[in-house]
Each structure stands twice: as structure tokens, then as C-alpha cells.
Amino acid sequence: MKKILLIATGGTIASMPTESGLAPGLCSRELLETVPELAHVCDIDTLQLFNLDSTNMCHVQWLEIAKTIREKYEQYDGFLITHGTDTMAYGAAVLSYLIQKSPKPVVLTGAQRSISQRDTDARENLLNAFIYAADDGAQGVHIVFDGKVIEGTRATKTRTKSYSAFSSMDYPEVAVVRGGRVLHYICKPKADGPVFYESLDPRVFVLKLTPGIQPGIFDYLADTYRAVIIESFGVGGIPVYDSEAFADKIQMLTERDTKVIIKTQVAHEGSDMEVYRVGFTIKQRFNLLEAYDMTTEAAFAKTMWALGNSTDDAGFRALFTQAVGADKVS
Ligand code: ASP
Image 1 (cartoon, rainbow, N blue to C red):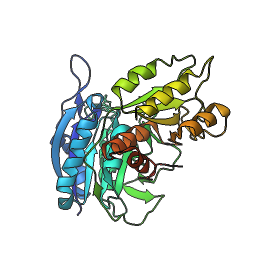
Image 2 (image 1 turned 120 degrees about the vertical axis):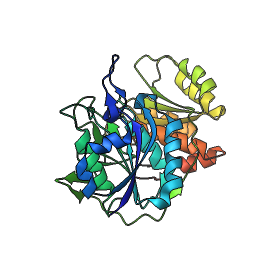
Image 3 (image 1 turned 30 degrees about the vertical axis):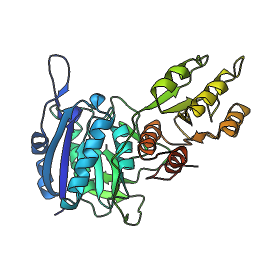
Image 4 (image 1 turned 60 degrees about the vertical axis):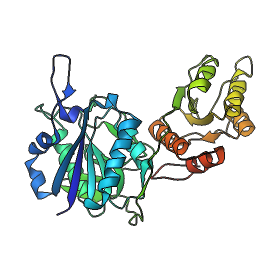
């Protein structure tokens, strides 16, 4: 039997009712006890790393998870992280950049309803996630949720309440787990890693443009952040209202070596700044990086990783434009 390490971090899956709403309370052992079928799937060791609502998780905890996996990599055939769903897509993307080319699976799962509720999806998700983690064809970082296996760089939480919380954005689900079996839709040769990274720079801001937005916001961002991801209109439009104020601000950011990355705020099909003059001119003038059809979570995670592992602009650009997992770079 495969040996899998369960790393528990909290989330709804481990939550119990309190006077002020659901809060993580169950430990990893208690989670496992609710799914006795797991005894036939794999050998499981457990580690309770945190017990947090994932609203309270950020780069600090994801670095800690990656460090734990690095330290224990040789001892296990795979890793399963139980995680709150609210920031799970960010966590999956960050782990995809911190743990690259892993021939062993790193699986994230959670639940929309607490394991203590009668109509919970927690037991099913936990079972499916272990079945996937113990499968010979599994490798790399994925979310397993509601029977779907989604690339870590392609997941977005698209539903707040339904069991089908996550979608694979502009990329197929790589597998499904159905009736206790894994059906692979995308099969890749075994990865030749792993390659671990230990650094992230969290000074990344995602700015969603809204019609009439004041360009003065960039002055504050330039003082506080090292990178700004602009969620622009359509395929990549940056407004020119009655002046060149936005272009001037982007010039100011680039002169201060604050990275500017343009992505679309539209959920599907990605950016292409060269289609319209409102994107083309500004892209050419400042040689801007584009996120194309990356999710916001992946663009945010990749920027933290590229900033944290480069020393100059050329190094940052080389990392940002390098394909990792299933992200898109052109
Ligand atoms: N607030 C919870 C969390 O993200 C939601 C969940 O897990 O579904 O931790």
C-alpha cells in the first residue's frame, strides 16, 4: 500500500458549530475516523500543521506546508492537504510554484459542509482525494474536489455553496474520481523533479479596474508593493479618459521597478493586449508582461514566486514567462 502523509490545516472540513459560527475544531485523526474505508486505500500518517479558517491563511502558511513536504518528501509516496476552500485555489497555485516537477502527488481537498453535518461532502472529498493520491498515475499539485481533479495552476473557487465549488479554468480537468476509481483524461510522463523553492515575496497587489477609476491609486501602490497585477477590461484595455494619466502612472511604476502585469478581469479566454489600441499602445510603450489566460490566483502566486526568486528585472521576467504546471505564458 502507498504511504500518504495527511497535512491538516483546518477549513470547513474540520469545522464545528460555535456560538459565533463555524470554526475549525476537529483534528486530523478525527477527520480520518469518519472515513473508515480509507483503511483499504493507503497507509496514512497525519500531521496537524494548523487549524485555521483559510481566510486566515497566506504565504506564511503555504511556505510552511511546502517546507514540511520538502523535509518529508522521501518518506512518503504522496501528500494530502486538507484546507479551507476560500483560499484553496491560491494555496494550490502557490504550492505549484514552490514544488515543481514533483513525480509524487500533492493533493489539496476540503469541503463545502463540515464533516459534522449530515449532508456533508467532506467524507466523499476526503476519500476521493486519498484514492487519487494513492494512484500510480498521480503526480504534481492538484485539487481534488467533488470528484474532479484540477491542476493547481488552473483552479478557481466559482461557487460559494454548492458541492461543485471549484472550476478548472480554460483547461480540462486532468482526471475524475468515480466509484472509487481514477479516470485520467490527461496523462503526462513521470516528472523528473522535484524542484523545491523556499521563497515568496508577498508584496503583490491585484487591482481590478472599474469604469472611472482614479489613477491616483497607483501612487499608494508604488509605495507599498513590488508588483501590481492590473485586471484590465476585455482582452486588455487600459483607459485613456481625458488625459494620459494611466500611462503616466504605469511609467512611474516601471521607473521605480514596480512590476506591472496585465491580465483580464473576464473569467474565460484570456488577454490579448495587441487587439485594440487601448491595450496595444501601452503594452508596446512599456514592454508590459501579460498573464494571458492565467487565473488571478495563479498570476498572483507566480508573481510572488518570481519576485522571491529573482534579483533583477531580467530574472523576474525569465521566471514569470517560464511555463510551470499548466499555466500559460504566451
Ligand atoms: N471559510 C472556510 C475556509 O476557507 C470555508 C471552507 O472551508 O469551505 O476555511
